[in-house]
Length: 434
Image (tube, rainbow, N blue to C red):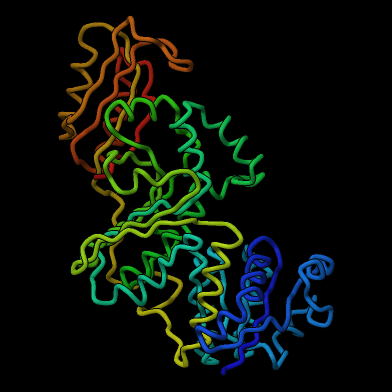
């Protein structure tokens, strides 16, 4: 039976969950995987935290050099988060020839090329299943399950905090600020929620996933990003009236001719779309391959045990595979030459504006849309006697959904409409995905 020694860098929520899984399932892995995995070292400044988990004092360290020079350690698990000191620690492990398993999406997204270069030099493994979508095995699916396919689209709900907030807003008719406060109290949102609610977390993950799915480097700066802080409960309600559900989506598209589209933003989807029923803090990724067709993976996108599950899966995979896999594309800091990233993408659009209820206003709006070749598929106009909701102000709300058109055309049209006489304001522009 093969013996494998593991070091864990950081014993926070995920590190503690990983330690728990490895120790509680040790006999199970002996029996089912024919490997004996033991935790031989932990890097943790809070010594008492490690002792409380039952870790022997002799295995607790506050020095990365001591950890990576330990001959009993084969695999180093990094669960510190952030860029530094995590980056320095991971590079130290790789330079020492240790295989690394990480859950750090920001580090991996920004410095994947540098980490892989170090891993290749020492023939070390570099595994990152836990960096995207928690316990959902999306990375293994892309690398070991979808090789027969050209993946054309990847659409996902890959941030649990924003999905929880939008679910509560829709279910209970609450505004964003109130739900965010609850989410922070319950631990679903950080004290500073910027990374989640402004879409950074999802953008990190989409950069990684689309690179794998499309076999080309998709740098973070090529991902269009928009968060949920401007979403109103009114838009969620009007979308519901039109048959739509609002989600923060991560969208990747590959046309097969060197054109790639990657974007993170709120979007309406039809109620019968598989992603529409993914609620609360759950995540899901919807894939379309040219041979297999449609696949959806669903599960918990965060948490100590779901994320720990993904980490331990990588530990077992690394321990049972003699040859390590690396990227299937030229993994450099920048995108490969010849790859074109679409910025003027095609979508349908939900547009809500407030107008004075007088003759000719909507005709002017229609004229602007005609100028930019935008046609309308759905339309709601409230009368003067409508039940005005809090925050709607003066004027009459007009809600419409366009046929598929270009992003830049809509931006130009909205700018013109906002300047029209009789328009109080353009309240919202939200994309609608098929």
